[in-house]
Length: 73
Image 1 (cartoon, helix red, strand yellow):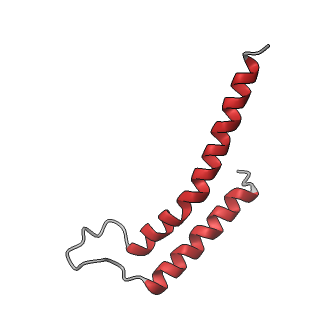
Image 2 (cartoon, helix red, strand yellow):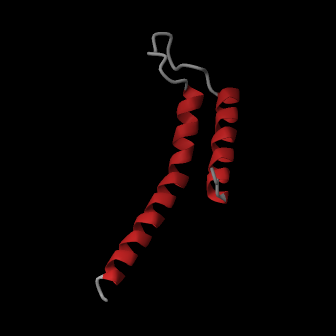
Image 3 (spheres, one colour):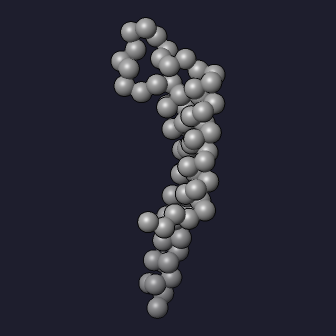
């Protein structure tokens, strides 16, 4: 499997966010929390969304541009 630089950067970012979340957040917000995900896991997911979203928007914009150009031929 080939992993490009953006994927590697995203993995490093998520790992750092998880490490920081474990250091500064409690595992669960409340004693009776459902215990499906820990707060550090949720923090890491939230931190990864901007990078993922930017990449998806760029990809969608590129595909849209290619499709619109192909109809001009």
